[in-house]
Amino acid sequence: NPALTADAALRFSILATGASIGAGVTGVMLAVIQLPSVSALFTSSFGRLLIAKTLVVAALALAGAYNHFRVLPALQAEPSAAHAARTWKVLRLEAVGFLVVLVLTAFLASATYS
Image (cartoon, rainbow, N blue to C red; front, side, top):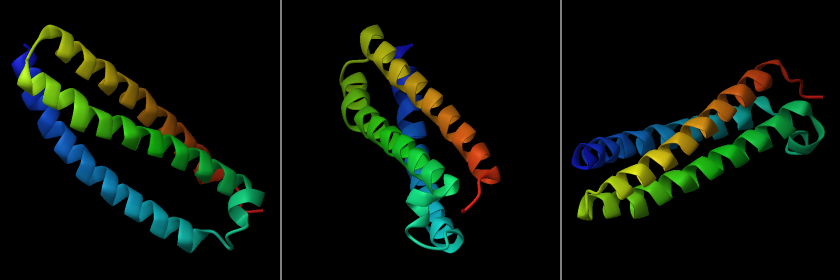
C-alpha cells in the first residue's frame, strides 16, 4: 500500500536523521580522541579506513536527504505504486551502504595508527 509506505518511510526518515546526526557527532569526537595527529588520517591504515567510512557515510547522508526531501514528498503528494517503488529502491541502496559502513567499522576495530 503506497500510503502506508509513505507514512512508515516518513517516520523512519525522521528517526534515521536523528540517529545519523548523533552517530556523526560521536564519530568525530572519537576520531579526535583516537588519532594521534591529523597526518595519521593519511599515513595510517586506521586513518585511511576512517576516510573511506566517512565518504560512504556522506553518500548515505546524501541518499537520505534525497529520499527525505524529494522522494517522500512525491510519495505523500501522490501515493502511487511508482513512487513507493522509488522509495524502496533508495532504501535498499541505503541498506547496502550501511552494510558497507559496518564492514569498514569492523576493519577499523583492528586497524593500526602507524
